[in-house]
Image (cartoon, rainbow, N blue to C red):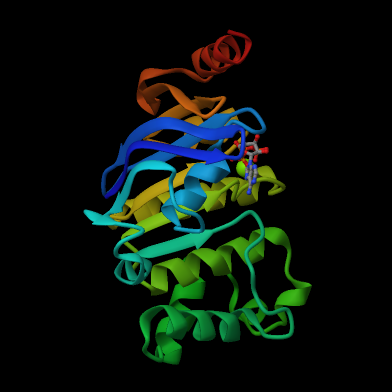
Length: 234
Ligand SMILES: Nc1ncnc2c1ncn2[C@@H]1O[C@H](COP(=O)(O)OP(=O)(O)OP(=O)(O)O)[C@@H](O)[C@H]1O
Ligand SMILES: [Mg+2]
């Protein structure tokens, strides 16, 4: 469970996030939309405790992310737009390294290969250096790391930007699978189509505020686009 309770973040004169409350239940994929500078990344970074909120509270599985920073880290996985991996290591070696870092335990080779297989990374690719990988392949390793950790909350910032439609679709399926296993997923995107395809709930941010929330099933692609553009021009 991810919860933001009346959260604001002020940078000097700029209120990047303004009194936002939202909740992502286990099994939900919540997708944040909004123009450049709307505050989406700032909100994700608040959950990650990269910076503290100016006011309000953020909780992961009921624990305050600032006061219980260490415990919360164990429940959490993060996939940024560019997944940070070691280029000189293979996908398998990166997974082994980060999975051990995340769980405190060395993972058996069979499990690591199984995880890479499950995210759709072919075994010969898994043995190649990550510096040769496409962006989609790197994102897959990122998801495998999150799954290896049994993360209960998954935070993603524009994970599909720059992915081709097939890779983005594969990524959506992986997110759905993680959610299906009880993970609470909060992601950002500029891609309305992807949001509609992937999310169970959609939120629209504008100038730091969460101005609309809806169940993805309640809007068509066309309605979502109209609604989004209406909010942006309001
Ligand atoms: N560390 C910082 N110091 C000062 N201002 C910041 C900082 N981080 C973000 N901001 C400002 O906060 C506002 C929200 O930025 P944020 O990156 O959260 O937007 P975003 O919705 O993620 O945009 P994009 O779609 O372009 O990624 C912007 O005006 C930005 O300039
Ligand atoms: Mg951003």
